[in-house]
Amino acid sequence: MSDKKSKVRLVGLEYLQFGAVRSTGAFPATAASMSTIGNVVPDSAHFVIEDPEITTIYIEEEDAPDIQIFGTQRKYIEFALRDMGTQTLLYAFGGVASAGVYSFPTATVVNNEYAVFAQSRTINGKKLKFQIPRASISASGDLKFAKTDTGTLTFKCEFLTPISSTAISPCVITQV
Image 1 (cartoon, rainbow, N blue to C red):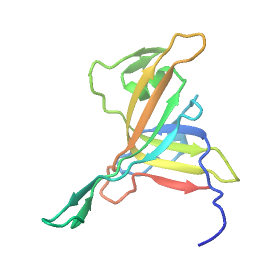
Image 2: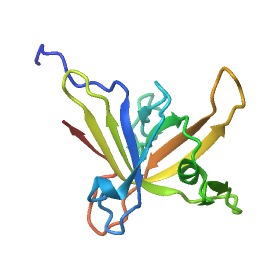
Image 3: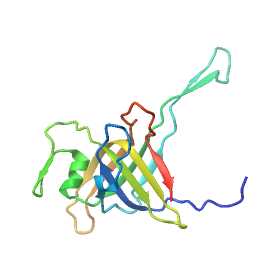
Image 4: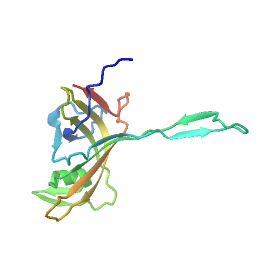
């Protein structure tokens, strides 16, 4: 085991981007095909990897488990924004926007799927890039009309299996 300390850290988000999910399942080829999301609330971003579901099976007259079956493990990125622009509202809730006017969707359930890119701030000369080719986007809002606080939109981007006939990872993390 090495006594060197890791120099790779996650300390803040530099930026986020959303783009269309590609039919090939691959991540969008160029940054130009993605839209940058701004005004991330400090300390609101989290990359979450939950414990897997575990089913423990016992046999009679034994205290120790006979076998454990490991199930799914949810992974997602969540963050909050202070951007209330029409494009951000479209990413959050679906609907329609035109000439600075936003209208919520008439359907109660909206399927928002996007490719998501997140890049951490540089710390110790290193940064991490997260490429998620397909994520289910859900959002909530606390749009305050207050003098001392601003409204926020909270996003949760849950990783989905990419649509493809070949095996493509639901998330690729690159250290640069």
